[in-house]
Picture: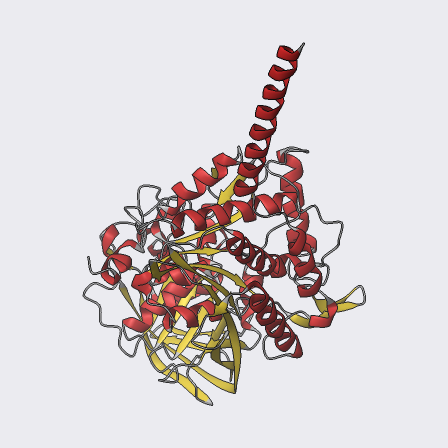
Length: 546
């Protein structure tokens, strides 16, 4: 009996050791439990923060809360001795003084504001005007050397107005660019930027619902309100004097007046297309109402050790829409999913790094940015005025709208195929027995619609995830239905509120995945790059001196 007792004791001792070892291993692999996440959500999405709109009492309360929480975690101020980076902005309400008038030998076309066109000016001037500006149809308005494409080749548009198409040639011809996957060259923001670089006085995009991925009503609504822009040293004089859109019907009227065929809309997507002088002139006056204000990004850093001058940056936008039109008696647009969820995750992941037994080799910057809802302005300001050098920034990991739909078998990498960060996400997902995939509708240009995009523009590889759709408990259709319900009933509405009953089990998985990606990057010496064919590859290589 003594032999068997001794053997049983040895067996049980071994079992206990192995069990404890496994438990410790599991703890190391899963450092995020979501307890403080729920606490942060309850504060950040509360009515008392009044929807977290920039320049409001809600901003003051949000900034104070974030600073306090970062201090509690032992993170250092991320901007010298401060946790804040001031972001100067200018609010402009552009109001056309009348219709957009287009005149040529064949007569005149008068386009009405909002119904037929929208137009605005970023110039910090009370009044601006296009007067008899010569109009050029410049195809897609793209200069993309990596695709052998230049719509402005041999073209002088200084002082003229260019008319361009939305999206890029790949939308119509899958053999061009990235096919149905929109590149940045297809985004409307790029069209305005490139026209300004070319010296155009005016730039007008032709709206088309399918390639734009949204109806004219979206354009009309967005452009009927005042807009926030970053305050620039040159008062935005480097931008085109007038930026705007016209409906497809208006474009057809323009072409008819110019005596050119509508087939130009198709020809513009063919290699070798040459711009067309339309032989007509545009006139438009705009009155600007201007107001300058300042908001803040929040920065906190967990310093690294032997490679502490290299940074991984986690981002989430803290702002939402504030107070607005009441819906069912509720006028506070709390923005629980969008994006209290991302900010709570930012704090949760920061906490996880502080629990690691050893500090990371590289430093980790936690950056809560302002004014995402106004056009990604806080992240744009940071990348234009980086606190830490771009060529020392390893990667950006962005969090925007983490949904409480429970555990998913998959996770979506928005912009999958852009950078080598995909492999890091694949590895982290595999640890959770999950799969990764790209967004279902890549022609919508979703990679360019959140704050990570501004990091990509300056060459920093950026990872952005979206909730998966294949629910562990309920299947794929249920998962898709949840997303549809949110988009139709809660997105940018007062109903986007937090409830303690949220199922955050899937959110915990997503946070753990993003933590694992950052942790691995923080222990390495390599810099992940962009994949061949990415429109951001050349920018990164230039910044790295390659």
